[in-house]
Image (cartoon, rainbow, N blue to C red; front, side, top):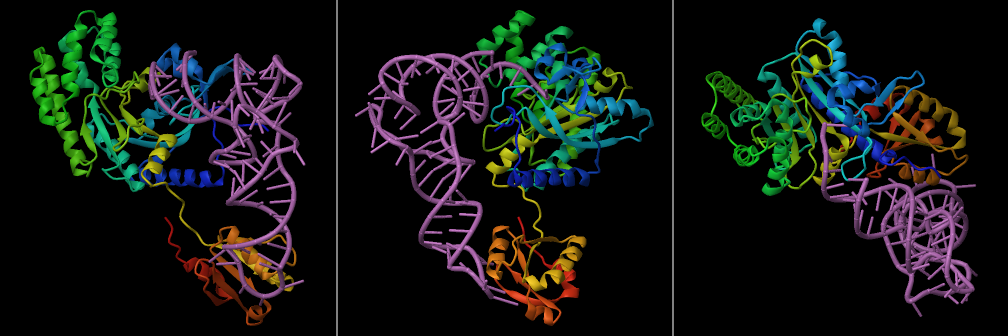
Length: 442
RNA sequence: GUGGCUGUAGCUCAGUUGGUUAGAGCAUCGGAUUGUGGUUCCGAGGGUCGCCGGUUCAAGUCCGGUUAGCCACCCCA
């Protein structure tokens, strides 16, 4: 027998049902915030990704040369496609643009916990708004998504940071522009590496500044409140122009935190400059969501990327957005006992004798036509007992019994397979009766 | 890319210092059960013991390689 490729998953019905329920709640939650869906190609030009992340990422992509000689790649993330699509129509679109996508992404890496080679992501982005109103709504929407699964502040939290703060810090330290990426990745590693190892790694790029940077960065990363950030800013050694810019940024911080508070996000958001995110294209506020009771991969991550669309050749377009993966999210929901399931609908099983078959089949057609789920046995001349057994095994909620007694009165017996209770219903009223059944599901 | 652990039925797993024809539970299928299911009982099907090679009279068991899965590292969209 063939097996699935490494890192690719089969979804048998039990898993498929959960997966669809996940997508449904994603969709409902983000649409409630006014986002509309879009999609793009799964296969894109390899250069689209190289443009954004550099040649070295090629080794992590599923890429090949197509029969037309084009270098192409399966999409590893949605943002470049979004940037390309939005960029080409940006001038004609009413702002803000609020789009979401649920789609498969591919990454050729070694599979492990929370990571596969094909994963589904929810991407939620706001384009065309420079102000922090967009950042606030982006974060609020992320929280809406978590809450749509019944998760609370006991289950998850969001760490909020700002790359601009780090830029001011690097101004004060005197870090050269072309070394700033290294400093950011050093900050990203601070939680995992000790001082000696990190300082020695960082000193290869910034020389003897490394020790000062590490110690100052540790201070900033340890600040978790707005007043602390402002006080930290006051102590920075900056030029008058930079001072004005920092003051303006702190005002934006204040606005953002205020908006998040008013939107009911305070219980979930914690200021945490230690988050910087690995991607090169982020420019401002960045955030990541984590489980609260367990160490795990980030459940979602995002931030502002104001330069990406322009870099891809489009007009300058402000942007903020985030992505959430299906693998880590389902893992989290299972841990929290909140695995989603689709709404329970009545599932009917037709039970009939051979001579009642024509009448029964007419109702099968009619009920299916009105949207009911209707099953029946393929077995010929099976007794009512056999058919009811099959009904139970199929997970049906109700059996519709077409017996000669019932049909003589123009009725059928509707039997609730959960409680065992039964009642007669006129054939003509079946669809309405079924529609009125209220099944309590999870 | 590096390392650790693990591969026996659809699933979860037994399988003794190497020794007849590799087992159990669950699941599946059939029957008991021809107008009322779930329970119970009986029966059946289902295996290249991941794969290749080696040692041995003899390998599911020991050795080497390989492959896959899980986990950690690396890296992170």
